[in-house]
Amino acid sequence: MSKGGSKLVIYASILANVLIAVMKFIASIFTGSSAMLSEGIHSLIDTVNGLLLLLGIKKSKQGPDKQHPFGHGKEIYFWSFIVSILVFSLGGGVAIYEGIQHIIAPVKEANHLNLIWNYGVLIGAIIFEGASLIVALKEFRKAHPTGYKSALIESKDAASIAIIIENGAAVTGLIIALIGITLAYYMDNPVYDASASILIGILLVYVAFFMASETKHLLIGESASDQDIESINNIISSYNQIDYFGNIRTMHLGPDEIMAGIEVNFKDNIPVIELENTVKNIKEEIRRANPKFTHIYIESDSILKSSYN
Image 1 (tube, one colour):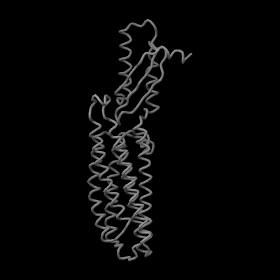
Image 2 (image 1 turned 45 degrees about the horizontal axis):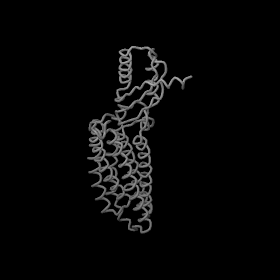
Image 3 (image 1 turned 45 degrees about the vertical axis):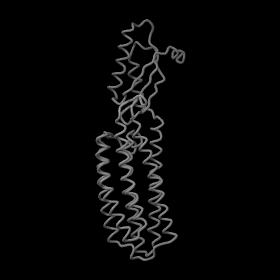
């Protein structure tokens, strides 16, 4: 998914979450539902998260400067990590806390669980969140035609991943809230509603853990895929001017930027002009194979020969 596509999905998600949050909070006031309150907090946090992701995308587009010679591409990873922390602490933590509080001091009056309010808000929210999720998945599929599960793990577009996972968690959370409220009403037992809030909190904690884990690797400096590295191997192997090469090191500088460092041992007595052209051609071929390789460094190192003997 391109940054433009990511922004379009984020804008749609923010608008939907603002409207849904307002509806959920109003419904929680009239019904006293802890699950509905947790869902309202969830939507409010998703709105803030969307704004933070937009900030990250904007900052990641800044070019290189003296302090950041490779640009600011990793800004999106930092803000995505902040989003995961917010989901964990505010989303999951508050939902679990609210559920426990309502188990300790349950609201026994069944009238507080007004099915008209709750069903209207939850079903409407499921429709809006579901539509937003479908749009996000379609945009993601354009850039990743393979299966969703493998693509989500392999993708380096943290903003797109965050939106898809958050929308998926939102739809799941709404279904849990719907089940909890229904059981609480018909069983005349508010513990079901409170339990739904706890389940929503556990769901958000899991989502936050997954997002933080994926973003952490990118912040530290995750390498390119094995397929991309194999492509570099094949390209360099085709040049007769090179005896040996190795120590191919790659690192993602952003969703669409990869740095590669390669050590090579050129054959002896090759004219300087031929060496320069060889290096130039190798870089061009690597970029043609994958335009994301924006920074390529080739170093001549005769010590490599001993490691191949």
